[in-house]
Amino acid sequence: MNRKISFVLIAVLSIACLLNSAFNTPIYVKAETATEADIYSEIDTYLQECTENARIPAMSVTIVDKDNVLLSQSYGDCENCDTPFLLGSVSKSFTAVCVMQLVEQGKIDLNADISTYLPNATDGDKITVRQLLNHTSGLGEHQTLENYKIINEQGVHVYANVNYSLLGEIIETVSGESYDEYISENIFEPLQLSHTAATLDESIENGLIDGYTNYWGFHIKNTHKYPTSKNAWITVPAGYISSSAKDLGKYLQMYLNGGNGIISEKSINTMFYGDTVYIDGDVPYWYGYGWNTIKEPLSEPVLRHSGLVETGTACIFILPESDIAIAITVNVNDYFVTNEMMDSLGWGVVLMLLGDAPNEIKSSDYILSHIRIDLIMSVVFAAAIVSLCLIPKYANRIKSAKKSLIALLLISFNLLLPILILLLVPIIFATPLWVARAFVPDVYITVVVSSSLLFVSGFIRTIILHKQNKKAGN
Image (cartoon, rainbow, N blue to C red):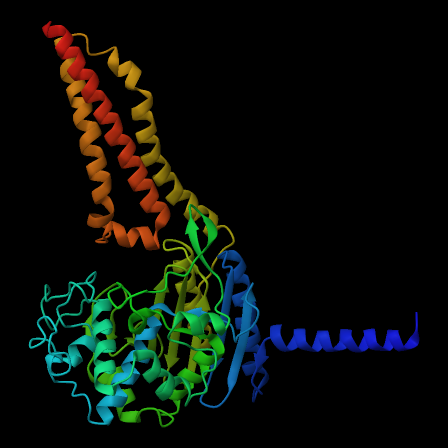
C-alpha cells in the first residue's frame, strides 16, 4: 500500500476515534478527590446497566454544579447530549420562569384575577395567576382551553395541564408576542440553549430524536403527537418544549447561580418554596411553581419535576444544599413499566449523590412486569373470544323455556360485561379513554376490541333468542 495513502488512512482513523471519544465518552469534571471522580464513574456504570435492563431505546443524562458539567453522557441509540427530546411537563418550569420575569417587570400580578389579562376567561374573576402556577385553581385535570371551568375546590392542589395552557395565553397577551417568540428571546437565547425549542419545526431542525410507544411489551417507533392547536389537552407551555440534556444542564445552572440575570434569586425562592401546596402520599411533597420539593426520607431536600408525552419522558432534579442538578431524558413512553423504571433510575442517581445505595433495576424486571400486565389483558381478550366461540353451543341450549332464561342471562352478561370493561379505565385510573388511547394504547386497544366483541356476541345471542321464541310461538 502507498505510504501516503497509509498515512491518510491512519490520520482519518485517528480523527474518527477522537470524534467518537468526544461524542460518546462520559465527560467528567476535574474532581478534587479520587472519591468524587469515582462517584460519577459509578453513576455512569449504573446508568448503562439501567438503560439495558429497562429496555430504554435512548437516554441522555447531564449532571452539573454551579460552574461545571460533572457528567454528560448518552445511552442506547442517542447520538450525543446535544440531541433534543420532548420534555413533557418539565416544560412547566420554563413557563413559570417566563411568568416570574413578567412579574418582576410589573406586567403580571400573581394575586390578580386572570380576567385582568384574559377578559374572556371562563371563571376568570375567580382564579388568580398564583393559583394557576401551583394548580389550586379548581380547574379539572382533563380540561382544555375549550371547556375549562372550576369543578374542584379551590386552594386544593389538582394537577391540570390547562392551568399552564392559560399561563401561556397570559404570557402572550402581556408580552405582545407568541409564546415561542417570547421564551426564545428571554430564556433560550440568553442561556445559549441552542438545542431547545418551543415549536415542532424548530425541534426537528435541531435534531429531535425519534420517539417510541410501548405495545404489549414491545417499543414501537411512533410519530410525535405535537399539539396542532391551543385547545389540545397538553399545549406547548404545559408540556411540549424540546431540549437536550446538555441544554437542560445550562438551564439548571441558572437556578443554582441565583438566576443568571434571567430571573432574580427572590423569584427562584418563590417558585421553589414561597407558595407551595402540601400533597400527601406515600412520599409527601410540596408543589410550587413548576417544581416539587421532597424532603423525607431523604438526607437533604430535593427539588424535582418529571414530564411525560406519548413518545417519551424526562425528569429534572436540583439538590440545593449540594448545589448539584440532574437532567434525564428518555425517548419512550411505557406507562406501567419503563416509565416506573425511569423514575426509579432518576432517584437512584440522586441517592448515589447523597451517599446512599441506588435503586436496583434487574434484567428480569422488565419482562416479568410486562408478562403480568399482558396476562391481564389476555384474560380480558380471551373472555371476548370464548364468548363468540360458544355461540353455536348457546343456540342449542335455548330450546326449552328454562334454557331460554339461561340464554337471557347470557345475553345480559354479554351486554353488561363490556360496559364494565369500558368503565375500568375511567373508574380505576380516573382517566378518560381518549387519554388512555394516547398514553397506554395497548390497554385502550384491548379494552375497545374486547368490549366490541362482547357486544357483538350479545347482539348475535339476542337475535338467536328472538328467532327461537318466535318459532316457539308459532
